[in-house]
Image (cartoon, rainbow, N blue to C red; front, side, top):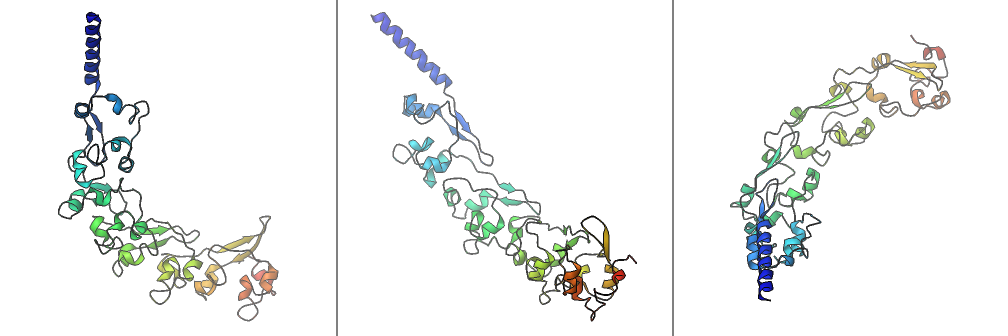
Length: 335
């Protein structure tokens, strides 16, 4: 009997030794901060039974990561680190017990100029701790400047009260900020060119961004008709703050030369011609666009419509210009 007992205890000791050999430190890596190291030795010294955690808390067959928010609700490490069994994962002063070392600066890559967030400058001497920003989880990436201006992400502090506002002071975060000249495709006419360099001589970034525009090129396209109603560029280019968007097209569409138009019927047969060259010798673009014609052709009109004063008939009424009811060959014949 004694030999059996000795054999049993010897086998148990071998199993315990095997467990101690296999129970290695576990490293949880983070992109911008030192790894968190979980020591099996430290935890087994306080709690001898592996089953306390496996698989009651950690199921080794179903590996998954837990956020700090989940831990604060009692999952994963938070099942014991709740301030009762062990120090709490929710207590600011105890963050460094697991997260040792200094988190690195984070760079947000943006075409106009990368934004760099320094953990060191925000924590040291500023009175902020980890929980000031990390309330249960990481700061969400991909937050737009418009969202920050509404108090999200960095904007929760950078609101002009706690810290400088996210709606201005672009160079404070976007070091080496370099604005670009933007080109907007405007076929069949020349591209419209917007010069940041020219506009920032008189205006601040916050005058346009993000009330009128978010910070992505082409994010909101507006037609010339929209601009004439005060949208997009037309909010300033109204003839009062700046020259009207319905005025000299060449100021934005450099080298502008509108094409002469050919009109075809549904069968593809050429039925009429319109010469921009002839008309712009006597009229401004705004005389027709966009009151009479949108930039893009708009709805096709019949001769009956024109006879009632629509489309070409707005001018070709026999008073301003020859009537559409007159000599057909004047339009239906290429000069």
